[in-house]
Image (cartoon, rainbow, N blue to C red):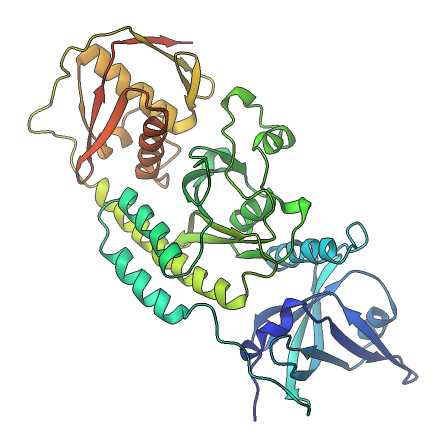
Length: 445
């Protein structure tokens, strides 16, 4: 019977440490525990290189390598014959293993001792199951093929990015049984991700930001690979204010404009999956749970497939929204409003916008709002199109790759959360209207 590695991947989760056997030039055998085994494909695995010990000396000297793995679900044991190929010290594979090792080190009380020096890549020459008693594996908590079938069908029926995101959140809860999730979009020009939607948290965190390369989410975006951690580790924790990231990043934004990132205070399992379309990164899907090892390889595969479908749908909606010509048949004009004026202050340096001295939004979304409100005050205009905003020089969009529709959704949700008296309403494909409940006093500087 020829065994495939993808059918025994639970053995790679590290619940029961693997054993690696080598020998030196004189034939003296050596057996050692192994902290981490990473699945690459059915023909390759990566082993964690943490110490220059006897095992590594033997491997570099050309020793044969045997790896014994044990399933924590069935008790079955497997022996793999491996051939060393190379060591990677940077890049996607290294970052995936580094993040996992941080969780393993924390779980075993070895933080500060376990440090990944490299990812040793091996070719698999053979897999054999060792004789011994086994038990039946428990049924999976979720049938992922059924979940994917139902979820992709629901995504296909969505009209508009806002509806697509809400449906995706519903699917992750109802079909995949995931209760805590965030969608973050890439701001390529600023090297950051911003939260566009979330589910399962007391505060939505819409508009909160993470620098590329920071934590599980930032590494996932930078390397464009899924990153998964099965144990609590402070090194990759998000259960804190984004202020820490702002200070560490040295980006220079005022802390008055930092929106707290949502997240579980004690997330013991974390996973981030890139959302891409046509080889372009759009954002990141992030999920977490309070239980150890809540997400496994099957969860990772399912969410990677789900994120791929979501990315294509997002790209389709972005293209469709911006094909609408900027020629409204009858431009609506604002009716007069009463009440005390609202001060809207705009700072040109980072396009941050404050309403009555309270921070609302910044960046491209801030520039969009300031442009809309300027046209509203000066021309009483209330009807707009995505395509018109795309070519408006006042907004200074980073490029055609920027997801303008995502910026509008972000702005709309921030205004709704603040109950600011300013409303954006979608009126058709690529069209939206602006309504204001109070007179505006615009201040720019």
